[in-house]
Image (tube, rainbow, N blue to C red; front, side, top):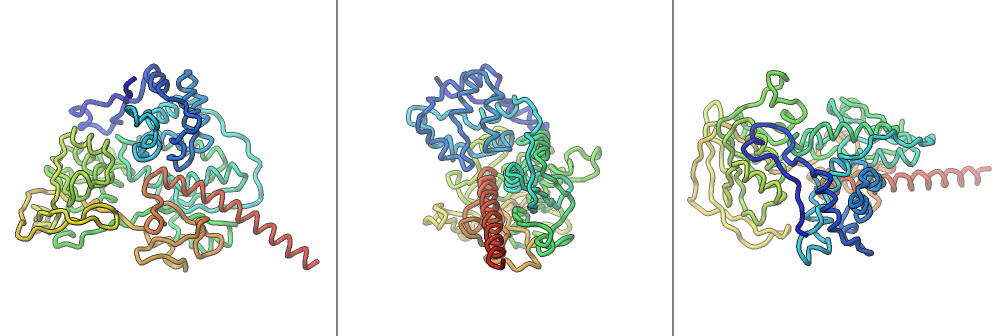
Length: 465
């Protein structure tokens, strides 16, 4: 049987709204797709999942029409199934090593996970006996939410500190509504709160409260503030009005509903022609959001499609929506007197492979050309925001990524870290599910740390007696 994929909104309709692009499986299609699963006795797909979901088991329940049981299996290891089913790059993880890839197409694991999450019965969280140990978590993105849920289930009293007005971190401000609806984020955060997790919003750690102060209140700390400091190109004209970083552009749209202006009073430039710089998922999200605001959008990327880090699915959707791609091209300067009027670009060619395994872009001399536009959005990556650790001595590299040991503890005892704040040193945190893997690992490490500490304190007391 051929692989079944979810239906989508027609491209000519979806570019006019911010509603979800993929419409979801109908129950009969989900059952058909689930029945393709071979139910391997040694499932490779589980090893490809950073949080080790029992994939064959939950798919087996869907095949039998037991959708709620499928969701319960997923939630044993993943408290954000609706999120992961929508935004995780399954094609590079669990689906990549599905045995069916040798004979055809992998099972639609991510789409079935989303189906199970969307068809689960909302139940009360289990009653948990709490112990007298308190954990502070900095940041409410995927790593922080995952660690909070796991630690709460273990019995710890957990409080999340979030700098913005709503919890969710990059899930809420960095991923557009048409890929990940806020309704899904809200439902999954509400479940985590039912586990006993407290969330304090508008709490900028490093400004309102320091890590040192938190260490006096809590038995351990998990740092997962993400990577909120956008990279700039440092080119002429970058400070002109109507030049945005992707972080600001997406935050205005996703977190502040600027696309509904003036119903919501956060303005956003509705440009006639937008240039987006970058080739990752954030660049695709930015370009597709600008398209929905009525702009003619061109993505400029200095390598070719083969080197583009964005998910193939997102590139495909962008192309269907009429977004142009100008490859082997880089931005030289932004042109204009008082606002953006054009960009100057230069053509590139590919040389030898660099450390990332991709071929290095090389400038072709005297190949400059201009493109008229009235908006530029820079989506070339970001680094950890230094504010959280600004006044706290914690070892980090020159880019601000924290160093951790194998158990994700930083150089400061009792302070752990995961997700994008350690991404530059470990390769962690690059995707939602990898960040969640860090959250699960940190929760186990914190539990072990506190139990060992308690044992050590008991032994010291016994020696004194």
